[in-house]
Image 1 (cartoon, rainbow over the protein chains, first blue to last red):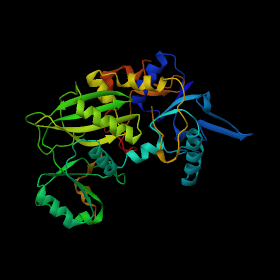
Image 2: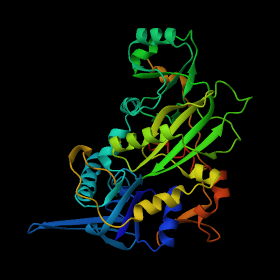
Image 3: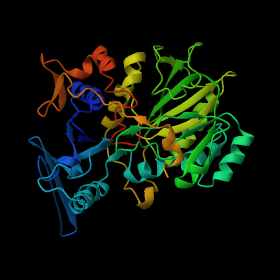
Image 4: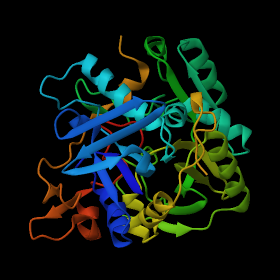
Length: 327
Length: 63
């Protein structure tokens, strides 16, 4: 049976997994839904109570019922590179592709329903709380007065996007940034704003979970680091990521989180404070892992490949992400 | 009238326009110009930053 990988061609992180799958002889079909109706084609037939579906890409043809697992890595927008792209064609292509795939018994990393839900940061924070992970005091609001009152209670704040997305018109990055106590919060009225108590961290933690396997890495904050550079993604740091053990209580909470979220894969970001406590910041359901493996040598790509290569489909998924995950 | 969070925005740093590898649809892998598989060269991956947590930000939420 075949592993289906939905991602873009330039995704070299996916390459790291394909290399391992190739080494073990597991059949792989990799395609980008953006190429639908061009280099990617599909067909599905519902006749006499049976379904027969196929996908083709790059000269490969695979039966949808012959899929053992589906890895939704970095897929493009369906039909985005079609000869005559349109929002309507994208919706048509999306419904055809994902609709057929949803009906098969393959295991998902991660199921689209679970993935969509898991992207919502307010939902993440609530689930993390329920699972026993420490969450910094957080406010999401469009009320300037609420923001001012929150800043009075927690004078050392950061702001970050609610969605984690970055604006594209023009392309800009919105790093997690410190907010001065005397800041004018009136612009809070123009968009939901996420304010969070800053964790005075001594390290960033990236915990990558693949199925049951947990691989944690730690990046120490340099003593002379700029105190305003709070976002590890944008900070100038030469400190490498190093492997670190996961505290048992954190491991149990993370396991509960992923079970409730019905995710097979999650990349958790924590801030480690001076007492060694790991504060939950977010869980990216499709977070990058290549940069961690490159620094630490941890076998993350191998773990993903092994998870995808497990034989046998899972029981049929239900609607709304219920029972959509991931054994 | 800009949302509060955009007061902290900065110009996006674009990845290098050209990468020293190209996708091979037969292998389903990116291949360096000398024929080696790009993903096996961790030094290069680190240098290019194409596997970092900001590499997919333009089109994806999840880093």
